[in-house]
Length: 490
Ligand SMILES: Cc1cc2nc3c(=O)[nH]c(=O)nc-3n(C[C@H](O)[C@H](O)[C@H](O)COP(=O)(O)OP(=O)(O)OC[C@H]3O[C@@H](n4cnc5c(N)ncnc54)[C@H](O)[C@@H]3O)c2cc1C
Image (cartoon, rainbow, N blue to C red; front, side, top):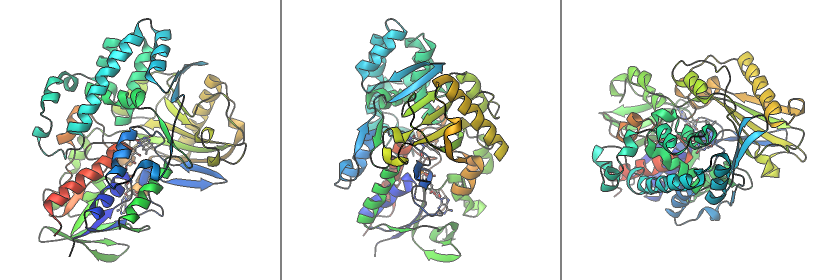
């Protein structure tokens, strides 16, 4: 008889782990507390608008392709991708912006217009980023983070300086202009830490950005990826149950024997949890946990977010699909997230209008608008604060981009710290898990395997390799391989 596995949650990491495990012959059931699947990448429909609730940047298409290839499939068997041009726009002030186009040559021309000599420097910088990307993909990110020896290879040794310097100083060596520096520091924000605390090796994200491009899953946006992965998972035999919150992991003789979900005992041999790590550990007795509450207190968490899902009764003319508002101090906002956690005085923010690319995501003549303000986790969150920040960002969009939108809002919903906690059982309402600082990378991440209970595993953005959709897919693969080694299927 093949082993029975319960996978907690249906985020990208759980979907990935479940699909691999089912393909390897285990009996796999996903239990998801919410009504729909996809975790932080769920969608909702309201008044004719379709909103992706979380991720909106489709980066590293190679990782998605590799995932589907592992099952003898291709991405294009499930969804089609459009490369965005411009990939995104960065605002620095009133009508002062730089469009990042869809190819490195064009981007280097834009750089040259800002700083003489920077196009050549960019090509050199990107050459190094590309080398690091391939080393990361071939030698590091698919490893389980169990031993320091995973990291010691000739390639990593030769590029040691990238692990002991940070991305801010690395970018600063090449470029003087503050705008260009900000553009090159932006991709590491996905990794959840300040650029000065992120190893320079993470310039792999610059290759993901300028080298590989920004894509959009056609006919539905990011949720198309969730739908496709659910479809593939079902094809290989994974069973799905929504509205199934796991309240307890059952243990006997230091072995997993089942879970309690919705008051019912469900037996299994192995549990893989893609729910937030800290929450999963609350489902087992204290003495069996891998980490204490003081361990979590000391960790650097990636930010939480204040999100707005907005329906507009007009089409947008003066902004792009993805827009970053970097018109205020980056350092001050970062310090309000990491050093002295508080609501930001003047936040940087991100706005996207997916219906510019996919008409079907909004009713005819309307636009779908998503706004994200990164904030520290665990901040006080209430209706008044949310409204205050909505007014701040709407005014900035109108002043800086010159596009009137406040009077065109026909649908509005917000999502913040309290929702991250209630909807996803997220620790302190974090949005993207743990920050990828040097001492929270690879072997320093929370372990994917319980140290005290046989049959309990962890996956997702709090484990290796870290936050983001592509890392979550990789995390599912890593945990499934570890389970295969520990519990070979007869
Ligand atoms: C607003 C936002 C924007 C983002 N933007 C991007 C982006 O543009 N590009 C990118 O690559 N990444 C982005 N990310 C990050 C990316 O979305 C995440 O890293 C990834 O989706 C995390 O997947 P996961 O499987 O680790 O966790 P989750 O998606 O959180 O999945 C965990 C699941 O477990 C379920 N669960 C929790 N507790 C229980 C329980 N007790 N029983 C049953 N189920 C339970 C939850 O409901 C949830 O479905 C963004 C994230 C957010 C929040």
